Amino acid sequence: MKSEMKRFGEKLRSVRQFHHVTLKQLAQDLGYATHSYISQIESGQKMPTALFVLKVSRYFNVSTDELQKDELELNPQQSKVQNLQ
Image (cartoon, rainbow, N blue to C red; front, side, top):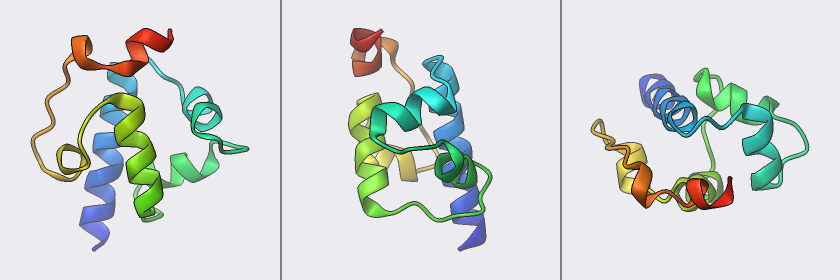
């Protein structure tokens, strides 16, 4: 379970950085008061809730399956984030 948490966090960090989104910006856009929860997920210290995974998948326009599989293809043309910036 620990390795799954860490792997999800690594993928989250990767997709976030790919889209040039800061922790603070992501937290604000997803409705969190601070970025500490997201930081703990990225570092593998916390397991994300199903709601969090859903919010992230919608934000970055990737499926929840893609976030949980080992292969994550990042396609900037399909990202909603591009439209928000």
